[in-house]
Amino acid sequence: MMRQIGIGILGGGYMGKAHSVAMSAVGAVFNTALRPRLEMICASSNDSAERYRVAYGFDRATDDWRVLVNDPKVEAIVIATPQETHRAVAEAAFALGKPVFCEKPLGASLDDSRAMVAAAEASGLPNMVGFNYIRTPASQFTRQLIADGEIGDITWFRGEHTEDFYADPDMPATWRTTGAANGTMGDLAPHMINAALALLGPITRVMAEIETVHKTRPGGEVTNDDHGQLMCRFENGAMGQMYFSRIAMGRKMGYAYEITGTKGAIRFDQEDQNALWLYRAEDPEAERGFRKILTGPAHPDYLPFCQGPGHGTGYQDQIIIEARDFLAAIETGKPIWPTFQDGLDVNRVIAAATASCKLEKWQDINAL
Image (cartoon, rainbow, N blue to C red):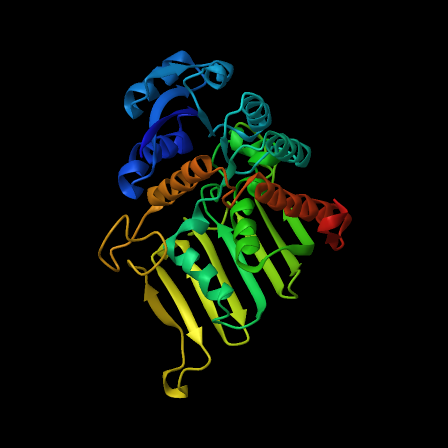
């Protein structure tokens, strides 16, 4: 039996719009038992909040997050505002008995993330963190292949999240160039670290280098990082390496990974998100090589969007899948990955990488 649930979204920009559209569409796409009602949206000013309200179809708007969180008609919260706001909003929502979906990274610091996990666990309420890229049908299929042992025991992982939106040194300084949470390790790295944890399991130690290439830009000094690299060791024994950059010339959505096992290998690149490359060592020698698999109705979460194989899903569809999972967690009361704890696990790896860079030595994750 369907019933409505009042949704409040904080932030109306890039991700606020994506989550608003997702909540509008998720009921039709997945036939969810809970049907979102766009109750209230919050933005930094009354004018922008009202503009977003009209554009996205919300009933009401405010420029005060406390008004939204405390409103009795808002039954679940989506946080799509800067990282430094996440903790206060989440703690207030949990205290009022309201489930929370929070965009990544979970908190602006490791202490914030730990406090948010503690608040979530104390409340017993559904909580999720937004790692959308791992939800593509191709990456979900990769998780299945690995879990089913299709490429054997994993021995090596290489991942990257590379983009070029700050590759031009003449790009002006903005809020993105200030504060660790807005740098590459706070912005891009969490997605690929999340992918590594999802695909291979826990990371035990890291060795990292992190640097700012363009230390000044028109308008000011750059106080956060442009790119970083790390070596890591997984709990399952596999070796790994990752690279993150916002100055990677030519890369637009370079969320990519390669995974080697004892029976095969997998390659994926988000810039071609509807294709997965699979190598099986058991194939006849004359046919042995990477084969391109186009996603279709046989792959996870593809069919609700499209009945034609190879037609593909897109970025917004990943956010709709997230909305489906959040609603399911609320409906069933059971946690659905990734929870706040999974967000904390990512932030612990980032903190370890930062410590490793400063100390110039391997850093154990459990030491933090």
